[in-house]
Length: 210
Image (cartoon, helix red, strand yellow):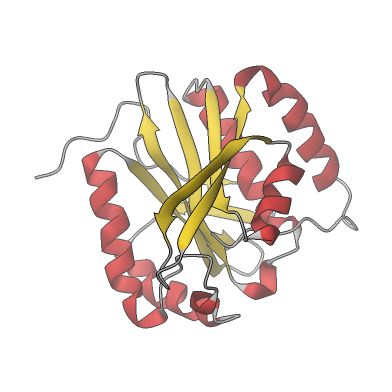
């Protein structure tokens, strides 16, 4: 038996104009397997994105972490079409602060470099700061995942530092992890910046696969 969900971190659905973040469910396995084939995302060596054949196991892994109280996973849905296009999570939940990391994120190639990522992050940040009362929200990515680093920086997050030889990648190489964060005092400015970008339909905002 897992622990009860951390107070305030129960599964919740979030929705904006172009994206819906639904609590992850085993029922999403088929749609997620289709989404990850869009761009063959599991072949990116600097990320840990599930192969479509292992999607059910990945869903169960994330739901097990949810039951343990350390993760709150979401399925990302393109709202106009209703199509499942990826996954994202609150992870490394620290209820003492409180503080969370937004990570384990990937999007189908067809929705990368669109406003979907920015709106998804806006929804997650707003919930973290406004409803959960977080002092800070963290983002982590591989040093060589330049697409993800650019996307995080465009959100307004600042680089806290680089954890050298922090982990081992799936291909056996050592991973240097870039750690970014947005603190509560920065949230009003970040929110205004993201709202401005989302109001400009011609603006392209990079997605961040993982």
